[in-house]
Length: 194
Image (cartoon, rainbow, N blue to C red; front, side):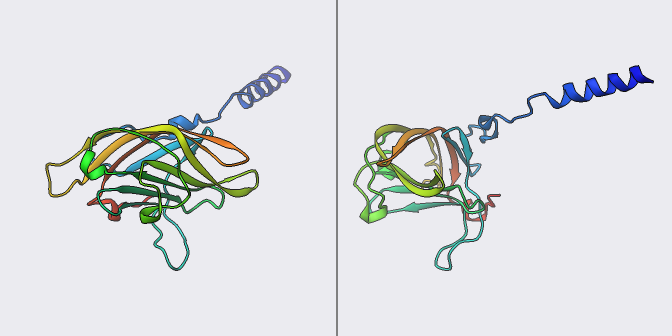
């Protein structure tokens, strides 16, 4: 009986010592180009994705919005509304509806968007780091590769791509890596992000 007891304890201790941690990259959505309405990236090695949830009274509660700004610009507004310590990313592509597929080099961000933002490609985020929310801006280090823009239907409804960027503020730098999205703007409003 003692031998069986020692064997069970040894098995239990060995099992508890195994590394059950999840690789954050394994949580990313697959790279697709068919309008699956997915978005994900790693921010300083932590998984970030859009999630619907509670918000202020003056804005909707969607985790991901696509906005066409003045001229032919595209913006992705990405929010994690379920976590009180995650934040948001804003991606601006200048002349997207004219250029379409290709490489978009990221330039400096000001923290403003739409008509008030710069007239070039940029990314910025409001993220929780060092026990407070901070704004991080792109500064000429990053790229977005748009691999698909579906022009076979009315408008450009499906677009997909990958991105990486370094964002910084006066105190800190963060890395956004393995970013990917596959969006169908015609079905996005019916998509739930959990």
